[in-house]
Length: 473
Ligand code: G6P
Image 1 (tube, rainbow, N blue to C red):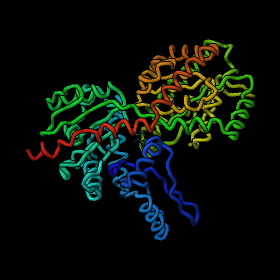
Image 2 (cartoon, rainbow, N blue to C red; image 1 turned 180 degrees about the vertical axis):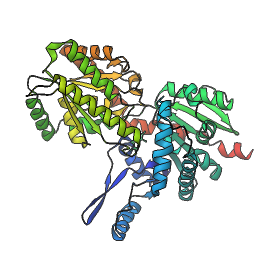
Image 3 (cartoon, rainbow, N blue to C red; image 1 turned 60 degrees about the horizontal axis):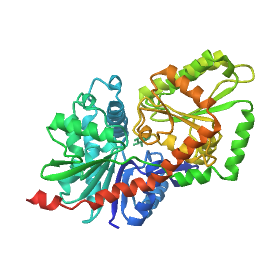
Image 4 (cartoon, rainbow, N blue to C red; image 1 turned 135 degrees about the horizontal axis):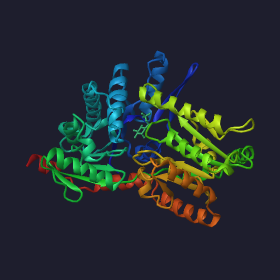
């Protein structure tokens, strides 16, 4: 197996400090789980930002650096200004809303581009320094769109892959970005560019044609004498791990206790990072609408909404939080009683075991983002239902809807129809619930995160190494 150089904005670990002790803890996210084994097996390096380490003492820092070296993590430390301009600024105030079709959220001034470019250059420099001939480089996500091109300049012969974890928008959206050409050319430095869905591949090809007059031939583009391949590689989750967590005795006890507190009620569940793409306000409005028009459900629904704090330094996220707080208060004020409130809103993070318990206890899972690259929560819910029960209500604007076609799909902008779908889910008979859940689980299991990694890397590593000849010729 060739050595892998993985490059992502965040390293797949978090540095936890408690009084005098400091520990490097593995993150639970999809990327971290899926790439752990290939990283260990290939003996390669993982290059990324370890988060803020400025508060560590000298000796703590040394201990952390030692652990990084042992696990072959190469940290890129960002200054406070880089965090604010590369990460919060260009990545999360410009590219994030752009790729999610929210042009109004993009600041009028293009202030942070230069810092984005410079930090991408730092990633490329460090990666090139680690590179040995024969290595495979895999760059991840929108924070690093210029890195493949910068690496190609430094390493004309390298095998480079890039995966875009968020939507790639229609060319009509992408064309509004002042730096559209530089970003497209940045991606074209890769040999293989992966997206979650066929639509994103089409949107990307549309942008290449419009901005660079490049024609895509099925799944390949000629660029500077090289063949660049594009393809859809829908990301999966570690479904076996959720499946076994959901069977653990302690989890089942938690499920039973949760169900006892909600006796006589049906449990609706939402779990999201608190992000304006996740459609939480409209989801709340749909629940409110249901209670308004169907008095029989009043007092009989418990909607648990978990919102995991995210990007709290970006104003749009703070404003969104206020908006959600306000709505939850309004609905509970209107439909709550002395014994009970309809919305149980939890602003905090949960570990995987706790999540598996919530998934397993739910009657209906609401995944209704107004735009989402894939949405792994929808898949985690299915994997956590070895009892083959529970109904998934899924936004048609999430990449996952392409695969999970046995979910009840909704247009999240249509509040009334979303309320209809919630009602349909609540009233669905056991036979239909099981039939749908069985099909959903089979899909999630067959296309898990390990399948995704080997599918992408298999394609990348199977490409003929024509780059050298073509570049030289
Ligand atoms: C999305 C992005 C990831 C990102 C994650 C969490 O899933 O595609 O690149 O890591 O959100 O966001 P954060 O800004 O905390 O890394």
